[in-house]
Amino acid sequence: MRWLFLLILSIASVTSRSIIPEIHSANAVSDRLIELVTQGSFRGVTYNRLAALADTIGPRLCGNESLTNAVNWVKDVMSSEGLDNVHVEEVRIPHWVRGEERALLLQPRKTKLSMLGLGNSVGTGPQGIRAPVLVVRSFDELNARCAEARNKIVVFNPQCDWKTKPIACYGSVVGYRVGGASSAAKCGAVASLSRSAASRSIDSPHTGVMAYDLSYPKIPAGSLSVEHADMLDRFQQRNQSIEILLYMEAQTLPDVVGYNLVAEVRGSSKPNETVLVSGHLDSWDVGQGAMDDGGGAMISWTVLSLLHSLNVRAKRTVRCVLWSCEEFGGVGADQYFNAHTNEIPTMSIVMESDLGVFHPQGLQFQGRPQAQQIIQTISNQLASINATQVVSGGGGEDISPWMQRGVPGASLLNDNWDYFAYHHSNGDTMNVLNSTDVDLAAAVWAVYAFSIADLDDLLPR
Ligand SMILES: *[C@@H]1O[C@H](CO)[C@@H](O)[C@H](O)[C@H]1NC(C)=O
Ligand SMILES: *[C@@H]1O[C@H](CO)[C@@H](O)[C@H](O)[C@H]1NC(C)=O
Ligand SMILES: *[C@@H]1O[C@H](CO)[C@@H](O)[C@H](O)[C@H]1NC(C)=O
Ligand SMILES: *[C@@H]1O[C@H](CO)[C@@H](O)[C@H](O)[C@H]1NC(C)=O
Ligand SMILES: *[C@@H]1O[C@H](CO)[C@@H](O)[C@H](O)[C@H]1NC(C)=O
Ligand SMILES: [Zn+2]
Image (cartoon, rainbow, N blue to C red; front, side):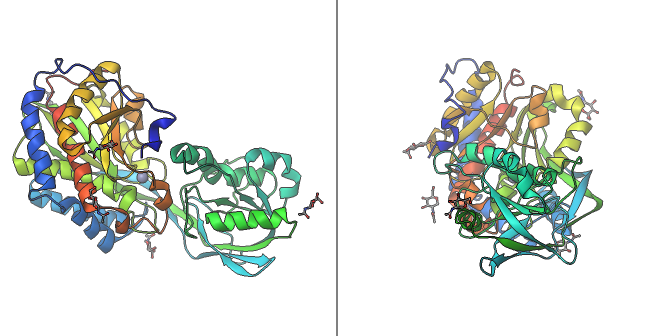
């Protein structure tokens, strides 16, 4: 399914392959990389590494010791493999804790609502907040009914056609999760609950980060399952009065030290020029953080493991960075960028996989047409696994600072139509992923990383 790009992206044009003669030598390496993960000794390795991480360490919330444990575990295995330059770089990261939480519907009937507090939210205090509810479907509706929101819990229930345009829907409704609380507080509301930014839900709420506008009081913010948001909406349509008791212990503790984890396969002739592959090691505290973004982190690590195992070095360095604290706004990646701005001129491409490692179809690429032609040529090396598509666009929260400075960027094009069913929920577990597809995703990632690192020149920008 290629729903992902129908609206905002266009298929890149196929172009001549004559511009990059050295592709032929990279070709042989690409075949070996693909063989190693599909039939060779690396078959299943990426999935098994991820399962070990997700099962044993579990979810890795920013600021939690589990994130540090994950960094240490991956670092130790990378070191024992003999990868180059394995090290961590310290960053300051926020430390939000969820604590106990619940939302009880008191009127029109007593039942427990499926809710999750949102990252950065304040708590309710020990008594909780008991208040009537106003349901709105948009910010416009809230503004029109602002006076009615006073002393109420505002429930945002934005509607969208997730089946046909999930990415666009996420983009349009995520604003209620992020900014709903302050908009409600502006009207005098005492708490805010938003419909999960999810394509579907089997009564499972989806969390995520929110942010306060400091001009208004900080009120507690949570998400509701799709089902419960719609039920509250129907109560209101029937003019039934709704009352909720919300209890949240959420709080933000002082910042802690976090770590971006770095490893490399150094370049043979231009080691100071770099191809960066990445994913984020942190996750939400629900589920296992398997899909978001354990998968992206693990395939990026596998790129190095494959090159090391084949004992090949590209001309340039291939560097893997596993980011810390993406979920609170690319926190670790921003600090990494600030510490490495001297590398902007020598960074050939920044790649991040953070939209699933489902069956891969190719690459999303953002760069100048000249660079896109080169990417298109490299894509031929993925013909044997039918992952030759190149579409414009792509990127990722953690690599965006580089891309804003003109460095070409890429992300994995994969069959992720169901991504937002699991994203940020208890459903983000190993069961979402398929070992064969994870292998293929790693192959796509490795072929591009090696081939770009082995070009005669940096990608044009
Ligand atoms: C880490 O998460 C666990 C599980 O939610 C929790 O019990 C523990 O207190 C957290 N640690 C910190 C430092 O936040
Ligand atoms: C709900 O109340 C409004 C305003 O009083 C009224 O216009 C509407 O018909 C009522 N809806 C139902 C289903 O009773
Ligand atoms: C490459 O980078 C290293 C460390 O950043 C630096 O010491 C060295 O001078 C650089 N070499 C070149 C040729 O720029
Ligand atoms: C190759 O992948 C495309 C999607 O990228 C798909 O439409 C097509 O059916 C696939 N072909 C085969 C032979 O699997
Ligand atoms: C996993 O993916 C492979 C290749 O895409 C497919 O052949 C296989 O049926 C899938 N396995 C499951 C359990 O869905
Ligand atoms: Zn992510």
